[in-house]
Length: 274
Image 1 (tube, helix red, strand yellow):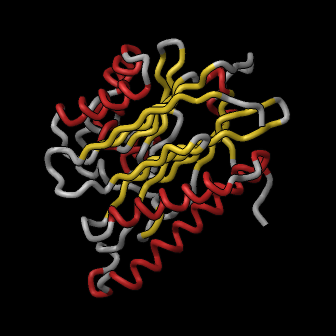
Image 2: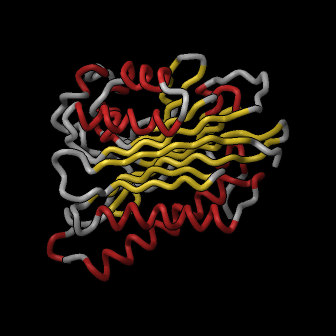
């Protein structure tokens, strides 16, 4: 893989309401992850930790940069199995499925394409991936949630989603009863000078305009991550808040970014799983 210099920063906070931080994150260049656990303090923190541990193995052991999506998919399957095993051993069968543990996940890692390195992004659930380039913030990931389905169907407006009574209900997750299928995206590095991975404790507390302002005002990704989490807590801190900010330094190309074209499946771009 062509050498790419990455400058990351990360921050997390339990917030002002929760007793336990069920978020977890990984900064292990070139692999970055944010996981938001669900299922209460006896379950969610374990689920998110499992996700991060499995991606940590991927970062430590390495992966075929030309077949990164397969590596991510295998890692998600491994995390799913471990979460299920934990539930089977520690969960109360009489309380399932409401007590089942689970976790969202957003992941970013470098992969190699014929024309050079790219970001491969994956998301399951409503944690988010944003790109921030030339002062413009774009959400790359698509929320797997009830309110997003209502927005897509034209039944509610995006502005109404923030106050919708089912705004926290997600339709995909690792573990639990929801689907664990991920969405995958490929981004040219030049189209993502700065990436933000965050839990909904950030994106649910401060709006995109505030996120963009903070990312634009703080050059150091460590400061940007700290300020994003701090702003989420200051806005009410109703949930755990986690942010990972990654800057691409010293490498770019002229490939334009097309959100529809870059959203990919394993079969479409990187080969089907065996």
